[in-house]
Length: 113
Length: 94
Length: 162
Image (tube, rainbow over the protein chains, first blue to last red):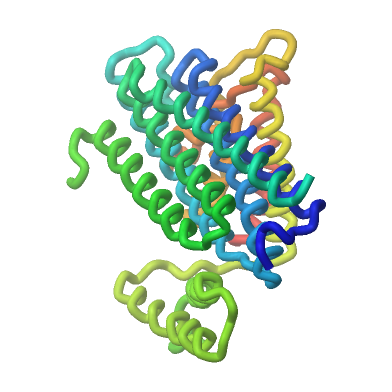
């Protein structure tokens, strides 16, 4: 089956999921600009990396499954991979930032636990 | 309105939104002010770039973009962890 | 069991990944997936990682549900903050949580869960005192964060990785 022969409801569903996901990713990136301090900004990209990615990958899996006429689930791998890696990046980055801020005796540096 | 038109416009719009998100992330990367902000911007930039590739794959209906997206994700992750590690220690490999 | 399958979870994950990458399952790809699942973990034995023991599958499923719900809700909360739709004053800050959890796998899972929900960020864990320092984007609603983490996440994790 070709993309042109897709049922109309399927097309709307795919587009809806993709737009919602892109919306979350865009909001997350906007947060990088809007939020004031580094420790606030670290929270923002998680939006795109969790719900944004999930919705876009669901949309992609749905579209490919409808076109191929069988469940195509390999996009799950991207989701799985990103779920595992994004926290690692952010935790290492937060620790590095905390280390540097304490070293520079920055007033907004985290308290010593 | 046919299904093909809906898909083309909708996915095109999603792609445009992701490119805008990439622009925001790039702004943070170039602007700083500190090194950790730049790394955070780079991290966001590659995640959104990967999503844009996935959506492009959906528009063209080709499954080939899947591998590209996976590789962008992996290399981006390695890059940002290596850079963050560098900030912490000053050396990547101890 | 331990001879042939030293790390059953790893074997299952590798075979599953192989099958997903070679989507329509044919006898050939099935056989290769089996081979990958059986052979690659024997290489891992040289690294001697501690085997993960998962007890209480039911608790694990319930925890996955709780985390998924929290993730969606905090995504919406953080989106509201970024877009400026949240009314009232917002204060952000650090929370120190005394953890009873000591198992390294459980701590890893907890750090992934906390960081993957937008709005909470794992900053530092001190293994001597067992205290976790985390950053919370929206601290305004009182400070029952310690209780929330201990009852919602830590207790099921201790049950699963007991």
